[in-house]
Image (cartoon, rainbow, N blue to C red; front, side, top):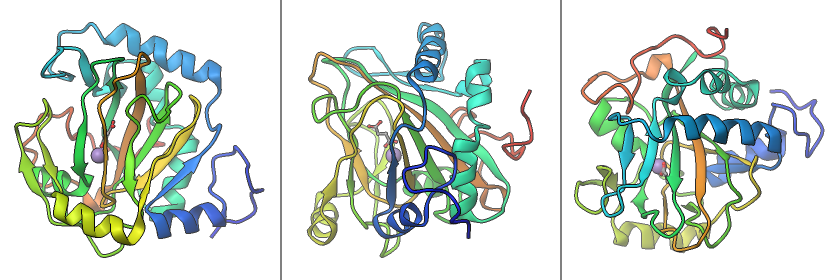
Length: 264
Ligand code: SIN
Ligand code: MN
């Protein structure tokens, strides 16, 4: 295991303390991983795609505003480069071992000011397993905050350590929001939160967040006057790839080319 990197380094690798935090809590926050200039570039690329009338731009039920813009690495060269960035691939290698990974899902979750809706309590593996036939909860969700995330603009909340006893019981919710999701019930969330409590990562644009496939999380609506955009890359080992190919490609990509091998 690598441990040569200094604490608080903004290089690509995780420190031992950060790896320990990931294993114990199910998530780790990495401040200042991307510069303001890089984030401005991501937001400019996103702005070019937001008006596209395509199925990969999923809209809020109530306002019609884009909730999630998906398939981004296939839609803009900036995002094609980003999914191969060592700041994603090195932590993934440290956590998963030296195995090839593919880009399972590449998106920005946009919570527009005033209208951004909630994400119900869930863990990602329930959807990956039930909808896509992914065998094991190995996928990693790698986020970059594209706006400052505060307590006001609909931040993600996690049940700390809720991955430790294995994936929690989940059921399919097709009605609450515009995005079908396997969700975790209040009774289960209550029990898990009694043990681990909640944690709500906040920070300026450019902050990175890494979390595992079976940690329980959700987020409240954005009632604030400020948007909350978060880039999300889900990587999954090739050996653990989807088996059903039932959902549209932008929900779970079928290009199993290992990341890090298709720059340019
Ligand atoms: C997610 O659960 O993947 C998204 C939640 C959010 O964007 O708030
Ligand atoms: Mn999720």
